[in-house]
Each structure stands twice: as structure tokens, then as C-alpha cells.
Amino acid sequence: MTKKLQKNIFILTLPIFIELLFFILMGSVDTVMISAYEKSNALAIGSVAAVGNASTVINLFGVLINIVSAGISVVVSQYLGAKHEAGAKKSIMTGILMQVVIGLLIAATLITFGNLLFKLIDTPVEIQGLSFDYLFYTAISLLFVAISNAISAGLRSYGHAHQIMVTVIIANVFNIVFNFIFIYGYLGFPEMGVAGAALSTMLMRLLTMFVSFYLLKRLIGLSIFRVQYDVQSLKKILKVGVPSALENMTYNFMQFVILSFVNKLGTEMITTRTYVNTVLSYIYLFSGSFASANAIITGYYIGEEDYEGAYKNTLKTTFITIMIVTFVTLLVNLGLPFIAGFLTEDETIIKTMRQIFLFVVLLEIGRSLNLIIIQALRAAGDTTFPLIMAVFSMLGIGITASYLFTNTLGLGLLGIYLGIACDELTRGVTMLIRWLKKVWMHKSLVKEN
Image (cartoon, rainbow, N blue to C red; front, top):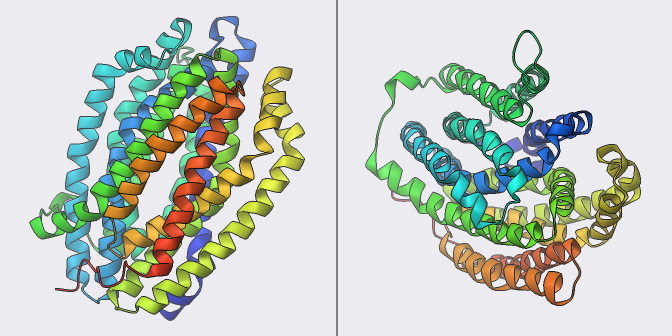
């Protein structure tokens, strides 16, 4: 581990931030282009709401991809910190093989049960067809995402975040081009609308996977044609990855249940939720990138058995992130009239977005605490407690509070986000206390090696 990688969180965070920025831009471009298509085509009414419903269903299972990628990031970082490169490479190749299996299972499940899931969350009948159109191609593309994420997790731990960043930027350019072709029907292709946006995403993810194969070979000398399977590596990956994925699944299940509350508010509020989440994704950029960078650094520290270094670095990163996220949230509130006006001309949607963003700072502070400290705990090998707390808080506090604020108190969509904020803050403070108590020390996954 280099001195720079250990001590300068910003150097590792910057390429991850840019990578996340362009990854999120992909989804935003889809939303904006579908929104424009909906405005220009009377037959496409409800397209944005359909994408919002489909995305929630997809995320419910798509998060299983993180079982392996989250585990690879931690295990490879610890191996490299312990100067055990053979173990690191073995873990990456084992992870890729597992991702192929997981990606195929997720795609098959979504395509088979997609329509049933839409009915379970009371998706309006008029957008169920559009929702499944979007889900179909996106589900297939999850296989490509699964493989790419495994490779990216390993490359980041090796310090190759810049190359991944460039790949994502190029993928964005292709996504925009493909969107124009398939949504609107250019170059002789049929006009596909929502389905076209999903097909565009699928092709872009396929290209990204092939580029990932190339980077894996060129940067660390591993060939996709020589995939290895190692039981010990798999056990270590799953020790981190399974609790991480179950935690994320719990979050997506909470969102799945909450979406049923939103669907009862009507298509207009479903669309508003899609726009709000699009804007929130850009605030998430800061906490998400700092959390990922800090997790890599923490993994190296743990591999070196420098627990005090891991402790201090995580607290410093947490403070910096909360300050930045608070500032960015305030800026978003100031610029919201322009942002909302760019997305829609519907005055009810704009008014609701303004109400919600007055309280978003509470949600984002809680999210920052959770992302940074939970990922640091995982990087240290402390994986069980965050999962237990997630189940208790998300299902017991997040869903309950959202229902009470929305239905009992009649706060509508605002109540949904207040309920989510209650969950984020509760978990965030609890995770901070656990980190301060240092109960995560001496849980390294690779010490015996």
C-alpha cells in the first residue's frame, strides 16, 4: 500500500466520484429523455412513472449483484494490505465466476415474475405494460453489470480507479447515442420509447463488460478465459458480501413497500418521486464516493493491522463528508426552482418537490453516516451488526414512520421522505457509536494468511 493511498482520501475519492457521477448521469439521461419523449407523444403518457416503478422492482433483486462485488472489494484490499497478491487475484477470479451465476438467476427471476411484482405494489394498470417493457431489457443487462462490477471492485482495490472512471464516461456517450436511436427510432430502427431506453442501457452495459475484460488483463494480468474457483476465497467474499447484500435487499424491500404507499397517491406523485430520487442521486455522489474510497483505505489498514489508522481516517472522512453534503444540499434547495422547472412544467410536482427538499438535509446526514461507517465496518470484517440494525430500523422505523406520516398525518409524498430520514438518522447514529467503541477491531478476514 502506498503512502499516498493511505493518507490522502481525496486522491482516491476523485476518480470514484467522477465514475459515480457519470454512472448516475446514465440514469438521469434516461429520465430526461423519456420525460421529453412523454411530452411529445400523447401515447407515451406515464412513461416516467413506469420507469420509476420498474426501477424499484429491478433494484429489489439487482442488489444481489453486490453480494460478490462488496466482498471482493474488502477481501482484495485486505490481501493487498497484507502483501498477499496471489490471494487477491484468486478472490477476483472466483468472484467473476460467481457473478455469472448470480446475474443469470436475477435476470430469469425478474422476467418471470415482473408482472406479478407490479401488481403486488399496486402499479396503475395503465403503466404496467410500459413498466415491463423497461424491466425486460434491463433485467438481461444485469448479467453484464454483475461481471463488470466484480472486475471494477478488484481494480479499485488495486488503485486503478482512474481507468474505470474513463470507461464509465465513454459508456455515457454511447448511452446517449443509443437512446436517441432506440427511443425515437432513428437510423431505420423502430420508435421504441421506454423499451428503447432500456435496450440502449443493455447494449451500453455489454460494451462496458468487454472493456472490463480488457482492463483486467492489461492492468493486473488476469484473463477471463482462465477463471479460477477457490473455496476459501469464496467463503471470505461471502462473509462480507452476504450481510451487505441482505442489508441492501432490506433497504430495497423498504422502498418496495413504500412505493405501494406512493402508488396510492396517483401517477403524478409517482412521477414526482422519480424526479426527487433523480436529484437526490447527485447528492448521494459525495457520500457514496467518500464511503467507497474510505472502505478501500480501511481494508488496507486492517490488512496491515494498523487499527488506529483505520479508526482515525474513518472519523475524519465522516466529518468531511457531512460538511460537504450539508453544503451541497443547501445549494440544491437554492437552485431547486430551476432544477424542477427543467424536469417538468407541472406546478403540483414542483410544489411537492420544494416541500420535500426543505427536509432533505436530515436524510442526507443520516445517509452519510450510514454509507461511510457501515462500509468501514465491513472493510474491518464487522459485518453482522450492520445487517441486524438495518432489518430493525428499515422495517421497524422506516416503513412504519413513512406510513404514519403519509396516511395518518396526511403529509402525502413528503411523509415518505420524512419516514426514510427517521430510518437513516437512527441507523447512522447507531453505527457511529459502534465505530467509536472499536468493537470491530481484530476481525481481519486474511490474518491467517
